[in-house]
Amino acid sequence: MKIIYDAMGGDYAPLEIVKGAVLAKKELNIEPILSGNHEAIEKILNDLNEKVEEYEILDANTIIENDEEPVVALRRKKDSSLVVGLNYLAENNGDGLISAGSTGALLAGGLFIIKRIDGVERTPIATLIPTKSKPFLLVDTGANVDTTPELLNQFAIMGSIYSEKSLGNEKPKVGLLNIGKEEGKGNNLYKKAYTLLAENKYINFIGNVEAREIPYGVVDVVIADGFDGNIFLKTYEGTASMIMDLFKENLATIEDKQTAGALKDLLYKTFAHFQYSNLGGAPLLGLNKPVFKAHGISDAQAILGASKQLKNFVENEVIETMIKDIKELNE
View 1 (cartoon, rainbow, N blue to C red):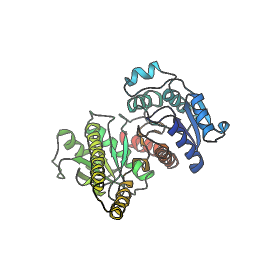
View 2: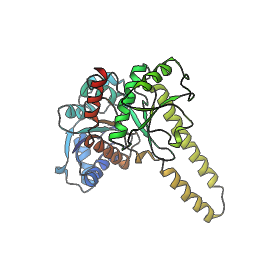
View 3: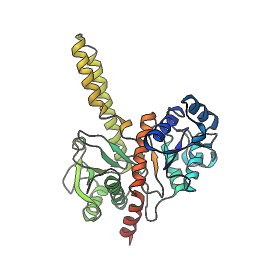
View 4: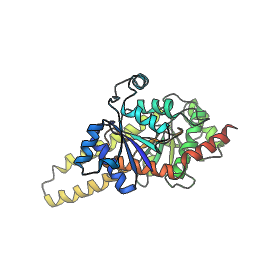
C-alpha cells in the first residue's frame, strides 16, 4: 500500500512527518511517498540511516501556511507539498494522503482536487475521541459550521460506515449531540435532524445524547454540525489538559518522594489513555479517495497512528461502501 505524506505540513514538519513515514514503512509495510522539499527530506532520511532510493519523493518547494486563505493558497501555490501530493493522489499514484498542515487548505484541496463521491453534499471531518472505555467518532468537528437536517443525516450514514467497517464496531450506536435526551429537545435544526435519523434504515440511531454522557462511552458515533462539534472537541481537549496541569501542580507539593512517584506513575498511566498520538488522524468523509487530517502538533508516533487508520480505511473498503449506501439513499 502506498501512502502520500505531506512532509512539510505541521508544526514539527518535515522531521516528524518523515520519521513517521519511516515507522509506517517498517511496522506496516507501507510504501511512503513524501511530498516536499527534496533536499530536506533526503537529509532526514540519510540522518535516519535510511536508503533514500527506497522512498519516492515528490519535489515541492512551497508550503501553505495556516493563516493563508485556503482557496487562494491552493491556486497560487500549485507547487506546495499539499497540492502536489493531492494531485498525485488524484492521478491514482497512491492509496491515500495524510497531512498535518492547514485544515482549511486540506478541505478545499480535497473538494477541488480529489472531489466528493456522487451524491455527497458536504465533506465532514470525523475525529476519534477517547472515553473512559473506547473511543467514539465525532462527526463533524469543524468543516461545516452551517448545515441542514439532511446533511446531518448523511453525516450519520458516513460516520456509521466508518465506525463499523474500519473501527470494528458492529451496528455502531449513533447519537445526536443535544441539550437533552428527549426527542423534542434542541433548535429546529436538531429537531428536524432527529426525525430523519430516527427514520434512517442505514444506521442504529439511539436518540439524543448529552455532552456529559459521552465521556463514559455510551455511543460509538456522535453527530453534530461543525460549529457545535468543534466547540465540544476543544472543550474536551481543554478540560483534559487543565486537569492534567492541576494534577502536576499538586503533585509538586508532595514532599514524600515515594508517594509522589507512585502518583506520578498513576497520572501518566491515566493520561496515556487520552494521548492524541494513539488515535492517529481524522478522515475527510465523502471524498473519492482517503484523505486524513493529522493533528498540527503530530509527532512520528501520531503519523504512524494516522497511517494505521488509513490502512484500515482502505483495506475495509470504507469508500466503496459509502458509494453504495449513498447511491441507495438518493434513489
